[in-house]
Amino acid sequence: MSLINEYRTTEEQIKELQERLKALSQDEKLKKELEFEGKLRTLMGEYQKSLRDIVALLDPEAKSSKAPRNTKTTATVSKRARKVKQYKNPHTGEVIETKGGNHKTLKEWKAKWGGDDVEGWATLLG
Image (cartoon, rainbow, N blue to C red; front, side, top):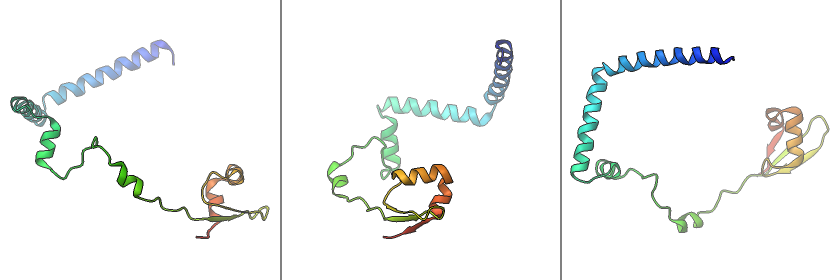
């Protein structure tokens, strides 16, 4: 795209966004939400409470995304063992067994015949 076309496109997008902003600024719902947010933030400042404090107060069972993880419990939980799959190539008759997708021959087959087709050749061994 030439520079002048990019300029005109950007200018058009700015005009559209300005119209959208003007429409939103006249929306009563938005005005009420902004008023509520302002009052809530003022109240939070008055009582020296953070957003986390408010969420914990309103929903004590909500999990904080920044909660420290207990390494002991995660270490004792065992991983689920992967199941062995057997792939039989109908084109060559070759058979491979693997627990994961990081098998050299399996990767080659998927590259040559497609992943969906190759997965169709699999049988679960256990």
